[in-house]
Amino acid sequence: MKYLATGNSFRLQAFNYRLDKRSVREKVYSCCDAIWRKLQPIVMPIPDEAMWLKIEHDFYTKWNFPNLGAIDGKHVLIQAPPHRGTQSSITCFSSCLLQVYSYRFRRIW
Image (cartoon, rainbow, N blue to C red; front, top):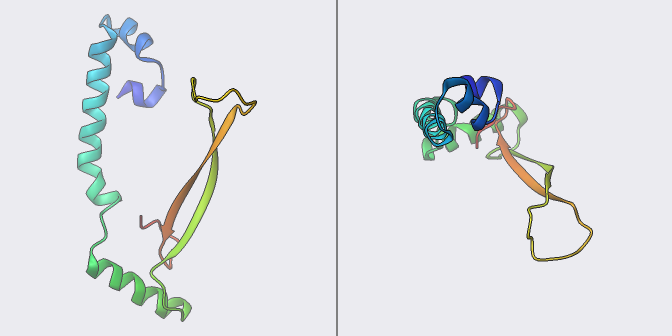
């Protein structure tokens, strides 16, 4: 948990706890997996047909427009990976993250 709170490297965490990096990495990955398995159904449930129908009904009731949600996208710059196969001068790549929002501007998916 300290790794998630501080963002320190595995090497630094291993030094602090006198463990090897592999042990720290395994503990962090198992902790993240446990957190995801516990919180994913609560925070980010997979929409089923009943949930989509409720979202559509609420959207129509609030905005008088039949819709399953509003889609928004953000371009995020990422560092170009090494050995990308081209020798161009591009140093940053962009990726588009898409989100679907309900009528109350809450993230659905």
